[in-house]
Length: 440
Image 1 (cartoon, rainbow, N blue to C red):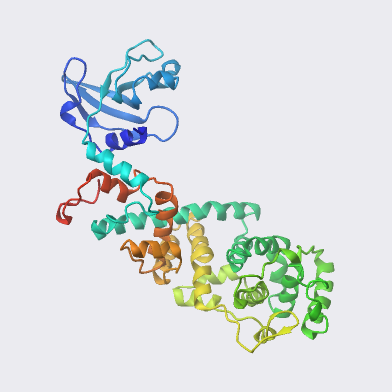
Image 2 (image 1 turned 30 degrees about the horizontal axis):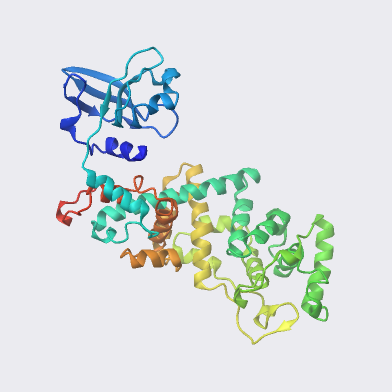
């Protein structure tokens, strides 16, 4: 039996209270389970119990076997001297704290169907372990959990954003530029795009926001795409040669060092997602006076944000996907789906983190509202949830479902998931919906 399961039973009082007695047969009344501790030390802090009219306050330690207290070295650790109750599945040995005092050890009793349900969930072959049962839960309960998960996902992303912010000396424009560049590469070219943004600081681009061609020259040149050996067929191309000439001047002025051109990936990509097209679109986006992030903060609704990011590659790319090779003429717009990806992964998280750092709840709430106005992503994870009967009406819920799948389902943290915890508390047989409550 896993110790974490016993933690779960204690946390939610899912044990047989009538059988919780001391060595003299006195009933142990639990007044407060305590605060669950995930770090070192006793498992539950500040617990309160009552035995034969006397109230005890202290900590609770839980093990599958009582002998594990010694096995883990707790008998020599003063941290465990304030343990008032030792809860175990098997009481195989008397144990003592570092002061030589015997611990009150009790065997926990519970409905075996709870453990059967837990074992079934963590051992079945589904990615979403509870996919056969989740749709039977009250939808309000599920949505309540998803609302918490979307905040959790944004907070997880905030760590990465704050790291960049620290590296850039708390420059929000530079931070936003780096993050945005990363997502312009999607998954395949995210790393070279990130390298490009680091090699070409936004403070340099800011000086040329009134000249899109110069921004393209800076981006393509620092990306290593203007190296003469990379696109040999483009050497007779006026646009390509002019970019090279412009970059020679600008790179000398700013002492720029290009990244390696071979880092960019073209194979297995749709031509509209080629890095050449994406770099030209990024140039269009950066050709904004006053700073892009400032414009993002000034937006008051999702439509204003979308207008900022629905950009098109320059005219040359209407007839090209790579330098020097003509294609059928087509406008190379970023597209609504690509715009949504930028909003979900870069724009909205940065707005949320900015609000947090400014202790401005209104900005944080605005970021969450934007998520509700963006269409849900289309990916394999959302398809898995659709098959389980859970639909995401917007990016707010799809982001929560991605967080749930990756951080709980995939890692089989069913006991830490409100949905899994609820289902386990029901045992093998689910109750009718009218009997369900919001908390397990």
